[in-house]
Image 1 (cartoon, one colour):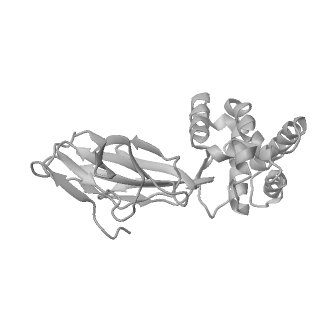
Image 2 (cartoon, rainbow, N blue to C red):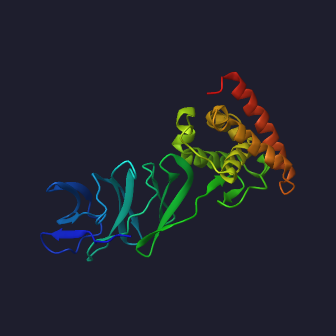
Image 3 (tube, rainbow, N blue to C red):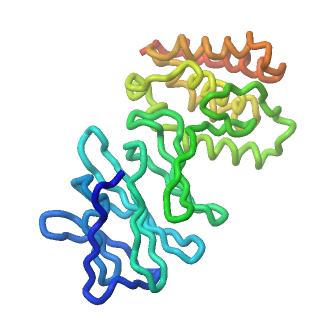
Length: 276
């Protein structure tokens, strides 16, 4: 929670046109955000940051949203806030939000503005924030699986078979999954810094196994998963997570089959290279 509001300085009143461009300017020894003639000093209030950046600007229901990022110390490398402007009104700044990850991905879809980012600076499942009623609201961490959204406390018990999705739908689902796949999961070196909970690793490996069973993912998904299954730190737990699905009486027959096949594929790939 912010203990002090951002300071608005204006050369001629604070009312703005909604389409004003947001830029970073110097304000004495600090940086600030400028919208037209209005300068917003310390947009994060008393939360001091070393560097400001405008990530992007988006139009939602007559308002202009400017997503800004504040770079601070190693404890929290990135903080986020949204400056909201509407015609004839003074700009408003939301409370700071985020997980401290610098890998935020904003999206405007069907009139809803959202920002997704890994749950920690080292990676983890995505946490999504969406804008509504002048605030950014956090949603639970979730992974997108072929069968739908798998929540943080659940384990997938079904996998949509390939024949139930056309090629375009398969490709779109895999594109989305690959785009949101945390950077820390893509290399064995960065995976050394990642800690998985048992349920989290089962959800991740199930997602991978399900989409690897589709023609659109039979090459792309195993390649994406290879660092995880080669990782000395996570290899055994990842294979154990797949085996737990095969023993789960609640899992459907297709899911058991795809996890069994995926496990064999990843053991073959891991055997081609030494465990590191």
